[in-house]
Image (cartoon, rainbow, N blue to C red):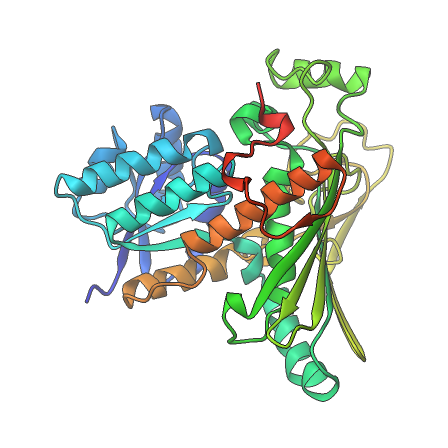
Length: 408
């Protein structure tokens, strides 16, 4: 059995760089390869990995060459949503020609819709390798610790929790394709509610119990374009992104909320409430979670860290950046600092966990099947919002459904 895992990344952008920075806390794996359709970007990401001493990474000319390289044991798929299936097909084709891998892990979402997510499952099963769905927020240290204490103390004495709330909010994505419904798969609901719904399910699932121990029975959701379809912000998007991002003609939602009702094995009703927004105005990325039970509760807010800075209005020429917090919105006033975002948001724990599972030959429960489950819930949320009604789980036409913002 191999003692270390050599990892290659598909994609060289924001998400891959978050993973690379988290690798400083991963002891059993090395970043050895990067592939991107933009060679210069791949070289930059590989140089970042080498500078952090997390692996002797190099840029590859193709996905096929990276998969076939003997130093690469696992592939982390972190490219754009619209390339998910194509990238997976290229991996599986390389394996069919004799290349060998131990595992494939895929960032959220598994697909832009249920059909694509289902195709990803078919492909990974065809490959015969271990697989994982990279959902970093389940690995946040504060969330993991809070869940453990609530279930060990509160639930053990007063009964299981019944309500979970989760929200992810910021001012909007970095790259133009995120804003384009057909390329991304939708708007903020598809982009971020995958996190919030999965966090809620995780909090309501007893420690050690399988995912199937609670099951959805109905879904209700609303979506809206509240900020970015206003004329002044339509113009701003065109200027900062691309002319193809035209929210006057083809807006995607910048706000979404959903309620999913579950039941456990005893038929006990449980509810997950999720809210996501690209129209949030605040310090930057805000992640908040709550879990409530009969005589207890817990809460997490990533903006409630221990460090804050203040810059007065006399410091008028502060350079814009994201050195305080992801999606930073200001450089003046009282602002929080997230000391180690890769740790706080769960990337360090996530990559340690998947590395160990793959090295041990263990199939994680958080796998492509779980990713497909999440995508199907997201599609049911879009269906509920479009039809303005509660959707009983599981709707028959889910595989054929495409959200309104993704239709062209």
